[in-house]
Length: 176
Image (cartoon, rainbow, N blue to C red):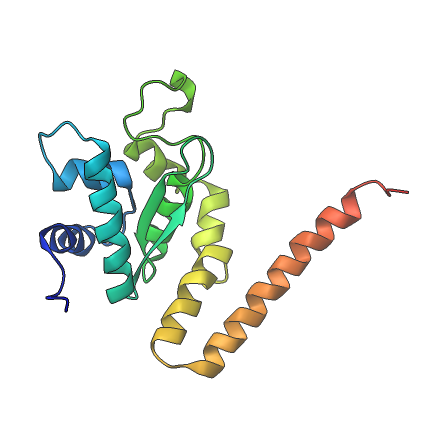
């Protein structure tokens, strides 16, 4: 029988509570949970397991798998559009927190990601009615038991997806 979250899960929960508007890769969580330690595979596995279990216990915490080499996990808060946006950016194949093996132009630091959220494209995604905003609002409506609102938001999201798909189909050459 489980006795609740262990030391690592509690530490990760505290990190998410202290930094509501951020998202964290596995490596970043390891650096905070195991300060001053050379992070090894056993540390990453422990943090991934604890983070996934925490996500099962706390609905507002979730994760996505990153693109590119290694397909790292990115953990975020579903109830914060800023956290969701940071997770989307960190899951991009161009982000590695401390991986110096990648070409220099691929490495983006936290400050650069925060600055990129301020450009027009990302502001549109995060603003009310934007795609990322809708994802967060759908979660909040479902969490709060607002079934009708969640259904309306999902329908709006579906309309957005259909518009994007239609723009791709309309701009591509006919395949025959």
